[in-house]
Image (cartoon, rainbow, N blue to C red; front, side):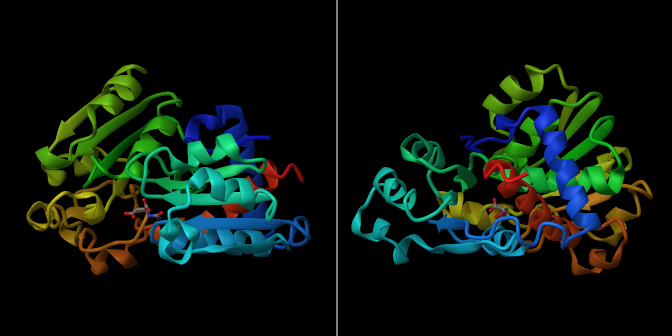
Length: 304
Ligand code: NCD
């Protein structure tokens, strides 16, 4: 039995198989419409979510399976003080696979130690978000045709953004990748990721403050929301929240085939005028999130 706690829990070749399966679903979405008949997915969400939870649920329904779960800690026994370990021991008997989101880093890993069904980390605090990363990789591979030889800019909250941490970890395994880290001083990428993942893999990178300066270099621009819920005080959030706003003036500096990704939700960091630019692919990316989760559920349940 396999759990997905970090994006690198899949090898590069397992990941290629997963992406291939997702692309097969894109070509023929009905092909697997009954393959999970009689199987149940539990979605245990201790933190808010729209896309991740609903795309997991849509994925399981598209496969002919069923879903059960809760969408906030308040509506579960966590509100009475139950531990994640006890909850998952019980849920293991109610479902065949589980997607868990939790504000505490490491909670899905703890759950996996007590679980007799596969656990998928659907976001743990400021740490990791592997299924968003698989979604991002599918988007890049499908629309760009490759996962190597890319200059990838990450812009916004690189400190607390778990989607950024996960995608950097996953992309670090491909050839000729370069990272451009664009953030205010206070929201720079944590040193442990810079040192262990980027420098540890000898990946060229630069850290900059001004988005305009690097726009022409980028093949991918990964925009992120400033993660309000992980700030210690509201004043800092208000000061930093609108540091970067991507608009058409900045888009004019970019390559004609650059792609703009964003895990969503967007707040102010991308002006809505950008949405109609063909390079803005964040809504397509959200759609791909269903296909990659379908592929992942099938792989973990070993039905393909
Ligand atoms: C992201 C998350 O939850 O980390 N959202 C998502 O899953 N698509 C990004 C965010 O909340 O900013």
